[in-house]
Length: 387
Image (tube, rainbow, N blue to C red; front, side):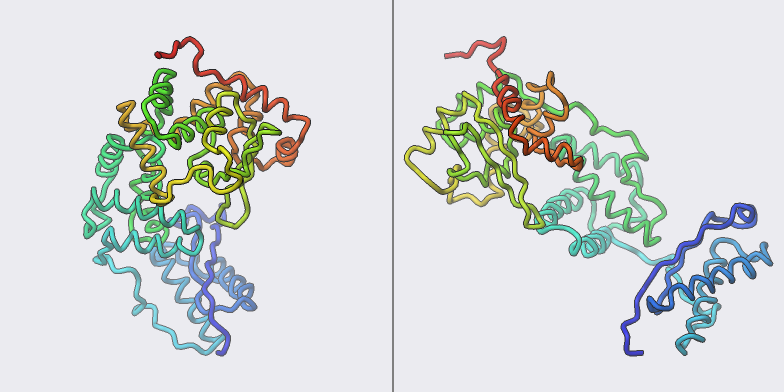
């Protein structure tokens, strides 16, 4: 055939009145070599096979033999349709029971599948998550030998040095790897599925005390670090947004900071935040007479180093490895907890699907509400700054 052969999957539920005659509630087989124009014909053929043949001898057809039977019947059907050579049912090859899938191979199978579906940034994050996995487990270990106990030990190990958010991401990656293996019937279960064992990552997010915030601001002579921290606590900006802020994004005449962070689909995450009174002085000091360029300019550092360096600075000052720059967003949200949740989400830049909320975000009539909320932030409340 000249046309490229396609692979499809056909899933059919077993009728309720026949469930007691069968060892599963549905069957799923691949419709190999069947072109789109013949798919409906193949499905109708399989329906006839299931309803007219497979249950005539219920003792013979357990789940495993039924699958072989259906695949054999489908092969015969394709043979008659396309004239393809088929393998007799007794010679059909299925997954070898002694096939060994190493952890390294499993990770490669998963990342190869995902690379065309996710952004380059996410793939880079995958590299970091792979390092954690390979540092704890032997890369040549048979994945079938990894059990729930080891998975729990891995989670506990991660929790000793990483924040709850990072632990969740790393564990989700491992779970994704095993879910892919499970779908391909290369493992019996997903031992990294967090639902299967007690979670240790649902603790309350770490936030900074007012004392720690002042300590961070007063412990550096680096105006960039001081400005980044100030933007974090008074605007709720993420570190990635701050890295991309340009001087022209700061509008003192309208008292606003506009973030335009590009995402993986070349669109922009745009969000405008009122300038808190405590930000004005340090912003003017940093900008001076400059008219354009990046707000935070450290040419010797790669973008990824911004986050690493600021986090190291933060953790050294507060002596807590679970507190990171991202924790400032928790402080920012905490200061606004008396306001409507919808308004807080808008200021935090959370994705909104509701068209009303999207319109609300762009509405000029609600700018005064944003100003009120941002200006209400006061980390000096009940705390006296040490001179």
